Image 1 (cartoon, rainbow, N blue to C red):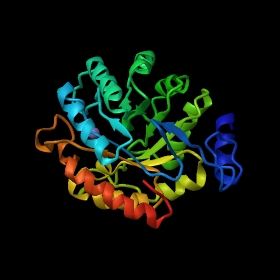
Image 2 (cartoon, rainbow, N blue to C red):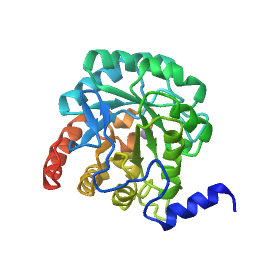
Image 3 (cartoon, rainbow, N blue to C red):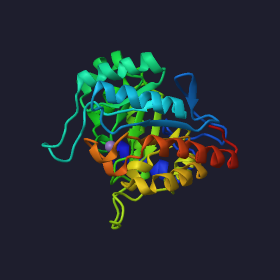
Length: 286
Ligand SMILES: [Mn+2]
């Protein structure tokens, strides 16, 4: 038996596991500064934006809408990991410049996905939070690279990963010296095909028990369908999520990616209103 297996078995069989992600007691909770607030505290935060940054005008207009509605962070893809190499791949570094401008004008924190470990210094010039996408959850070279960054990391659960594998991916980042990891449940692959993924609501209380790291929920990818986003958002916050990551687009039918699951700004405002009620019911605020 090698070292890693030993550590794994210890983690599974004892309450006091040796991992950096492990919760020591019920008051052990990491909070991570975002803009002028924190994630992991009493407030439920909204991370929102279009799946892809499509143009300077688009991202600027939606940012003002989202800020007005109560979002803390703008999330938009500059580098897009698409299933097909022929799908829109993102505006890349130009989009990072637009996002940076959005931050200056609106005060929203910027979250965007990084795919290339060599680009960490470039992203650090433009954004506030580095997102690791579902498809890269076990890209260990990338995890180690963002683990050496000073920026918080928003780590999405791999679509076919167990909760334990998800936490070990977070451990890669923590082990490199970066303590600021936000976990994101975004749905997993199951036999069910009525929705794009199966949002794993169980993961929220399970993660809460096992780790002190903040946990947010992505009902957009979790369902793949705008019709279900509000209901699953309510469920996630009721289950204890520290925030929501929601795709919002002015004209979902014309979106360059993930239009089917994008809600419109007026639905986002309704979502915030509904989450306000749910948050209060579980002793949180928005
Ligand atoms: Mn998307």
